[in-house]
Amino acid sequence: QTRPLQPIALAVSLRLATADAVAAAKWGTPSPIDDPAREAQVLGAVAAQAADEGLSAVRVQQIFRDQIEANKEVQRALFGWWSVAPGAAPTVRPDLTQVRPVIDRQNTDILLQLRDQEAVLAGPDCVPALVDAAVAVAAEQRLDPLHQATLARALVSICGPVRD
Ligand SMILES: C=C(O[C@@H]1C=C(C(=O)O)C=C[C@H]1O)C(=O)O
Image (cartoon, rainbow, N blue to C red; front, side):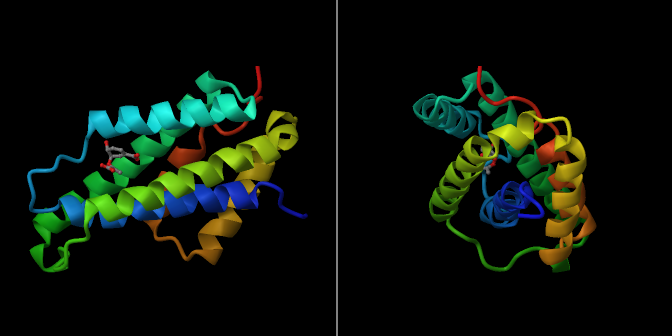
């Protein structure tokens, strides 16, 4: 394959795309953007999956902390936009309990890609390969500037060994 890291960049991008639905689910409700209990659940689940796959729980949790931060950056940006431009605010409210299982599936996809691309991630050409993959995904998914910038945020810790 020409771009071995494209599947992981895509999985990260698809996880990030859920932030729009999450923001719409929370907008105008008491549900805060930051939900530490849910974050702890996500980080616990990925640490358990990491252990099953023989991956470093510390590395995997760092990578998923980045996914969470990037997701919240999208939510904050959208909240900011909707508060100054109420006409742009969502008119239908997705159910958060239906979005979270989608996030859980993306978490598994990302984790399995980390396992499958272990050699590339630990190799000397990871950063240029990752940039190349991210640019390809941004074009293919037609990401807007917010999602391009936050995709970069989500990818910061991907390169490096994922096994102890
Ligand atoms: C996506 C959500 O918003 C935030 C981001 C999370 C994530 O990216 O997994 C988890 C909890 C929240 O702090 C959510 O509430 O589900």
